[in-house]
Length: 284
Ligand code: AMP
Figure: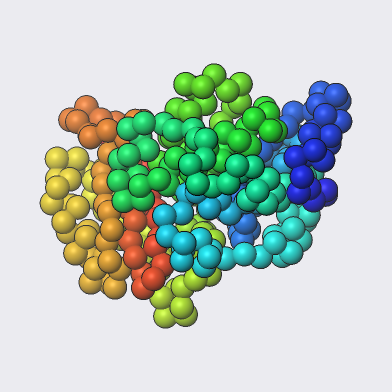
């Protein structure tokens, strides 16, 4: 496994792979690698591709400096974990490498509307930062495939739109959320939870799951169900930041004809913000 920090070295090694006609996969991450990330790697390796994992804590997608500074960092351990999975290249650039003119007034990639709703309405420049860094990685690496988790569902929808609109010749592979046995979605931020917070964190998913089961039986009951679920979550100790039921294709409002629905939610547990979602298929 090669660990690469500069664009020149990255381009050189990618040329070698490309000359051999290898299929190149990219898995963008912010590090603190866990089983969710590793499942993306597994999928890429199963498809017999040359696997590049990027680790870059992207400053432009954080709205609070505190959150950026506090983001868990564990590069050495990350590389050890990735090596076990036979990752070919780990790309770990610096901020200056990725933003050669700095991060103020940076040249950006922006997907309108989808970036402004839901999470985007609370974290103003978050998705602008995400699409900008992903497009930089796409431009540098030109992967054939790029893997993203369904855990960050809005991000996935936005990236797919960017790829479509900007004519990137890259296939986006979405991978279902990987969970601990108790249901808690793996997340780099889970390490920020205290012991007591961690003990109740899985109830976030369990409560959404019970909402999903009820929704499947009666789609007309959505508004009440959102109120009831919010109350249940707050009783457990979460502060509900958002809870939406939307059409999963374009994140639009559901109609009586909606078949593919998604419950999207973010909650605070102490100082940690947890994000999760569940897809609900309506059988009529
Ligand atoms: P992050 O390091 O949080 O930016 O995540 C990097 C990639 O891993 C994104 O595409 C995430 O959606 C994906 N990911 C993070 N957690 C999970 C999980 N529990 N299951 C599946 N994919 C995940």
